[in-house]
Length: 473
Image (spheres, rainbow, N blue to C red):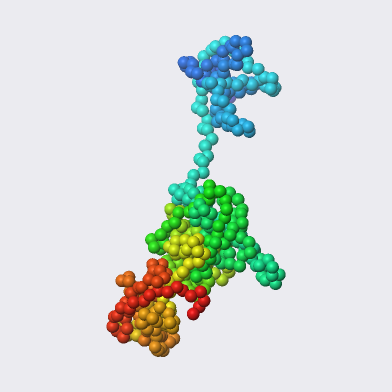
């Protein structure tokens, strides 16, 4: 009996499970089938981007909607409108009169035709447009870079390359060679300023202008004391772009300094730095110093000699002349002849071929603490007069030089000489101050007044300047 009951119970459970499966199937099948039916597109108002293609009259270009590509078995998909680009010929493609659709028949090649218009139906809702590729911004310069580029473009035509052949042609034993340097246009008459050492002993000098015009130049005048020279070329005036001259008395340490020139004969180049010092005295080509030189860290190399040193406004503040280096290449210390000396020397070279420098006829040094202590001075300032040239202007004016020496840990210190504290009422704290005033503010034949300390007392002396001798006295 128990066995029959168990069989009956199992049959009932199986029947119930079958009925449950039938009920679930009846309920779920309609819902599953709806996923396989075509979705009814949402109806929206057609827009120009989704209007169907319209039939065209014969001979007219087909009017098209936004660009799509139809492929076998797929609905047309919208593509982003490509950016118009100019063809190889240089002229841009004319813009389309409006949104277009290009319908390509697979395998149609170049002979593909636009498909005829289908029966208008509801427009499908278009998906979002793909994000376009980012446009690369054009290269832009900083404000400083734009200013430097504009300055170069404006001043470049005023800078020249100077090439020389050295040595006399009639002496086969004399040193022969070639050299190069730089220069700049002084005026429309064809005068060119450069360094004396660039053209010294030159048999032939050629000047190359900004437009590659190359002509033979004549040497109008040279001044070894200032290491300046003036050349002249014969070219049309419109080819000559003179540079504007600045005022070296207004130059300050830290301001922008720009060197233009022909380093290593590679062609006109521009280098940038600052004025790192002013009031330097540098050696000339004679025994006399060039006063008031400008020191700069703008790279100056062989070949830059004679080229201009400019301020940020493009005005000439000096003529590049020297570098301090153990390798004959830039080491961050370059020197330029101040433009105020250039303005004093060049007109004389143009007029007479030479410049007459005023001369005091003495030598000396700046009063240091050691000199002040040895000479019992309260203030370590002034120009100490060490020696006097016999028969020179200072000797005639009663200036007194050293009479002795006093030993010190640093060496012997001169004693007994006059200390110049002012010239024509202008304070003198360094020997270069006296040299600068005589060289740039005075002239030959002018009488100047020196305020001196002698034996602890102040006195004033009158000295009439003479022309500097051509050889070391």
